[in-house]
Image (cartoon, rainbow, N blue to C red):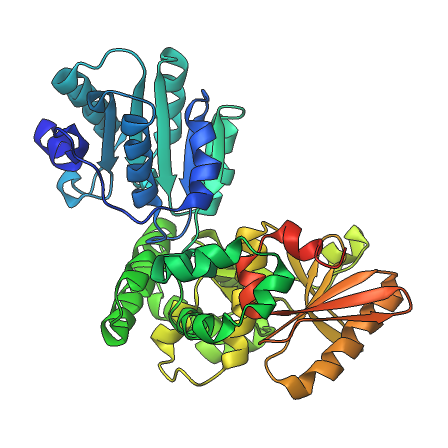
Length: 445
């Protein structure tokens, strides 16, 4: 065990530093939580960068907090050398081997990657958390339900969780063209629009819409090998995070469902029809959809209502969105096809992942792509000739519900349309994806 610890903890070597892409947004979220007593939980889809964030935290602890490297232990619990029968004794062995090997003094940091691999880890964490207030646990996992049910039950008030997602467009563009994007982000929206930056940004935006933001994909400009890697991601998630955990017998049904939902991202779904199509039944399909949601592969939106009761009892179809546009590319390699799907999926990702909003849609005579909990309507259009129809739909919703503002995300037009003391802000997609929620919602003022 000590040898395995030494292999994983390269920071124990003198002057070693993990060389990784910085993620400023997560630094702002995570670093203030490091000094707190609670267990810090990072949860998100496989390959979104959770392990890298743990290593960035290690860099911060050593360089900024002057923490002795020997006081920090990292371990990936998916390592095959632990064998298939992992138990809480495995965690005991790791912890004791670390103490015996490094003999740390003072505050200790234990970073455990993919901790859901250990059955019953929750009780182990609670025991050690309560026994020693000098130990800070930082853990990751690939299931939302794992940390919202079992962990929350046993560790109420003892844990703080942060969701980790693939790179946003802003992160992607900053990595690909730092000198181009950083100066632009400092400018207000009007100056940004007038800066003639779009011709330089547009190729990056198209690349992001086509290939997504998984960290390993953005490092490589090799579309064919990236497609193969993303296909492997999908297979790993289906087999390791769902099939094994939930003892799924008909794997082919789950595979067909996952591919169907990814291909139909941004569309409404009919569960009964899907069940017939993939040779299953409605109950099973609903269960499998919930599993795909738990591992962050897909997300759903329901029909909006200002009445919570109506919203909960609505029988209208849910819409499906995908964690990353790269998965769409992995199952549909025609890059020119379904551009509207990619654009709507990117807008959903920004609203859900960056704005951290509950997202709905609305359909009653007209259809609005997105409605936020506050009632803010957001339409998405690809073609200029569709703009007038979209504006009419959004104003219809606003007048019916007495909402003062709406957004229309399009490819490159910036404009404010006023009508009867109500207004719609038309925003280019690239500005919507790079400016903050506060700047966008405060733009008109």
